[in-house]
Image 1 (cartoon, rainbow, N blue to C red):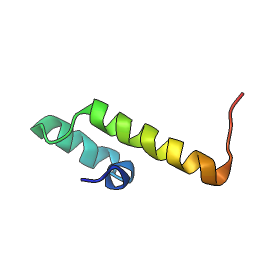
Image 2: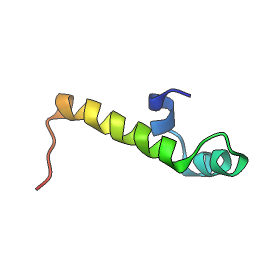
Image 3: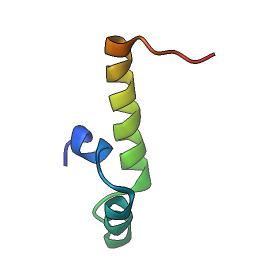
Length: 48
């Protein structure tokens, strides 16, 4: 699965993948962080 696919994965599907060993929570987290970093440039969001 690509990082984009992982970002749109439903929580129940992610849990199934965690349980059967096809995906780790760390892999999912990395995909979401990478996606957020990429999207940051296009939406210019920030936190303070």
